[in-house]
Length: 325
Image 1 (spheres, rainbow, N blue to C red):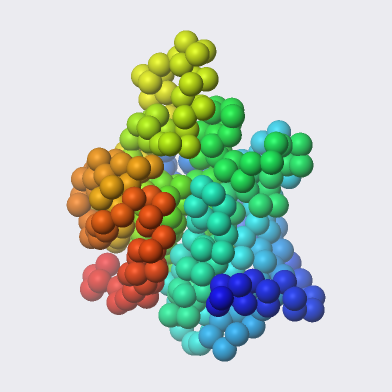
Image 2: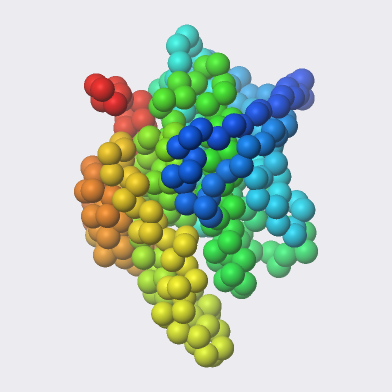
């Protein structure tokens, strides 16, 4: 009910003046350590921020800025996000929040609101081909990154990572944000993308990945929702090894060593049928065995465990920064 009230309030308020600005990004020397696939070039980009909601503890505004990756679908090249800005003095930690494969934005908004409640600036970002970014010509399918075109789907992973990196740059320029305490989080698909972001971005030093894992090819090969994709892939004469080759540049395991030494929290399900426990464990091992919470649930039955998982995530980002970190 609280989530529905928040969404209703956000769309029912009278229009507020739009804020326009320009961000100039000059890569630091550490940018050369970022894998070429996700590296950002020096650039200026405009943004639009439209206030929509005021509460006692935070405000909400819609944000738009251009994606650093251009695709043939023009509408997909504008990133849409919602900024939950906490009130109060001081430099706040800031986190990019990503959504699930099924595009349940209410869940991400809930997490962002709870983070803002605790003094963490939260930017809920819509991934490529989701929400306003979905071309009208596409067949109606909310699970855009599991598209019929697997090549487009994995390429969307690259764009999503780069979009989050640019979003973190925008956050780092905000006067209310502590640029040393940037993070990324997400559930399922959002957890997979955010794990890559935190691993490859030298300026993003903390992440919480819920119901996420590595070995992307195995996930795509075994998840129940991919049954039709697997059948078409095999009928076309292609193999699991070919899928591994295609997906490896977008697999969290490829970059997970970059999570070592960073603040990381994970949540996983013991009987997850979409992100198998072996996939979650592989990411956990490769990341240096960070803090992890296992629940006796599957991917879909995790609904009853997500509230405590979100509470742990909020506590993680709102908690004290490690001394010397």
